[in-house]
Length: 165
Ligand SMILES: [Zn+2]
Image (cartoon, rainbow, N blue to C red; front, side, top):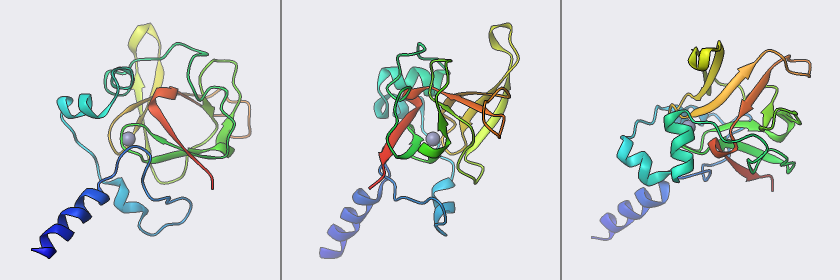
């Protein structure tokens, strides 16, 4: 009887939610475990996310520029996917961009972000998605001002933030 209670407690405590995953950057050998694809139904995503987050992450929406909570955000820590908690960027990768969205010049290594051609709205762009849950993050451009030349333009609503201790 006791064993069952313990097993259930373990399962409940272990289920990942939001940004609550164990910190795994830069060199956690178990980091691979968090990379298994997360496939939820539309109904499950609607329950998990706010309506605004659902629109951005699952319907590839875009928040209005200059409105996102992380646009002017400067705290030290890790930005992770708002859908599944996978760590994507650190504060060191963020730079201020006049475009109006949080911008990063590189990603945490480990194929955490998928890039996909996007021909919507009569433009040719490259969409970026979380490799774990397929959530839409934003777009990547080749006009970044730092040495990488890259600009990951990301919706604040696609991100959660874990402050550095
Ligand atoms: Zn994700």
